[in-house]
Image 1 (tube, rainbow, N blue to C red):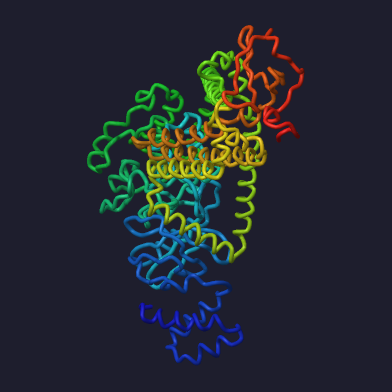
Image 2: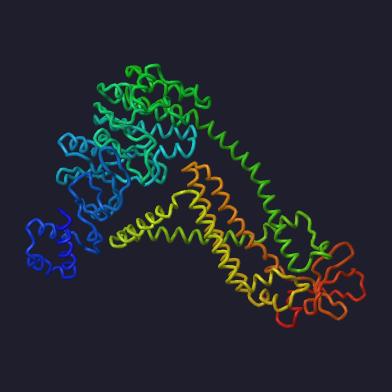
Length: 639
């Protein structure tokens, strides 16, 4: 359908959906549309139930070289995003309007033929937990769409780029891939392009193999959340397209293929997972054929940490002679099972040693951190109560007291953060439940897509940009809290000894204000903690040079928020001291040193602090502990 025809259809639809269902048919018939356009209007109206965002876009084009717009309809599916592109087609994220689920839809370039459809139908027969399922094959004009399971997570290429896999995890992934291959091979399906980009992990870590049975047709367009794979599929011009570094010698040479070619590709994956690199670094077809002829290096010769048993399995899988390779994927799976059994006790011991080392390093760091925090709280308290300058000797406290002050208040803060986190995750779960409702799901999907596009437009998918945005947000939130509680801020940043008493009164009169000050900064702390986790995850994914700077930037703002929250903690919450009478004044003992007391007489004119001897005849101890603000004007205890 050309754009002009679609505009005409859209105008009719826009008016028709305003009418009651019983009146729509007569209205459309009265518009004198051509037969094909009238049929298209009735087709769309028959599936229209709620708000129709697809009215804003053109219908799905027949031409396979045109990018489908958001909202285009292909059968029962509505396109929501372009998530991948390769040499022979594109992959879209789409919503299944009938079954209310997200799917990945491959749009293959070139005309559909019986062979392509036959292979896609064969792939749809696979039912294995480690294989991404094929749901549907749709022919629209000369274009073929293959609808597949959408696996929302990272692929193996991204994970290998982000981190070195633990040996046992690499073996377990190899077991799952072997099982998936065995299931496909039993139905006569060869993958032909097994590589890290075609192994996708679900959110719970389950690996799933993509593109089974159609890799040679679709040139291995990877179904991911938008990321590209490490090695793009290359059309070699011969009978066997694929990704050269992961191809078997017979596939590179254009010879007949069987399931043992997939086993070779699996061997390359195992080698890369175990050592962090491929057996042959080249991507050039001719150079690879020459390197393969000389034999692959052993994995344990590249990395001595690779267990010999695992290196033996890999070496057999990478044999240039397929007669000497394992003759089935089941054989590889059994061998990897044996390797996994040997590794598990060793892994447990390594984990114990690792955690012991972390505890040995972590506990001293935590103690030092608490001491620093306790010292900071004490410094701010000393400044607020005038235990500085000539009275500094009264503000010295032992390290044990500093440690306790560092811990003080942590329990309530952690409780509030835990409750807020639970509330957020419960709300998120309820929101996801609501997304299953048709209209809500379409709305939230559109909002999520808009947010993701906005984030990309702002370059928030870049570690440094994300860190700068989070740091800026943290600074703004701190300024907002300081502005909201400026009276409290003024109160705890001045000294009882010399400041006008009116400046100090907000600490007495606003118990709720003190609570809200701590609560708001605790919320900001939680936001910055989530932000720090996001930046660390992004840094691991990108491995960018400025990743550490980004983490340090967010961590610095987080530390500033914590310090701003804890600075007035003692002044806000520990204001009860022993009451004494001194020369007719109502005073309080706020510190001691040797045979001296530091007393504060809050109702007197500045300076209000006095250092007196314990045996001073003018000093009378009352044996009463009360709030220091009661000394300003006798009355009810301050909150």
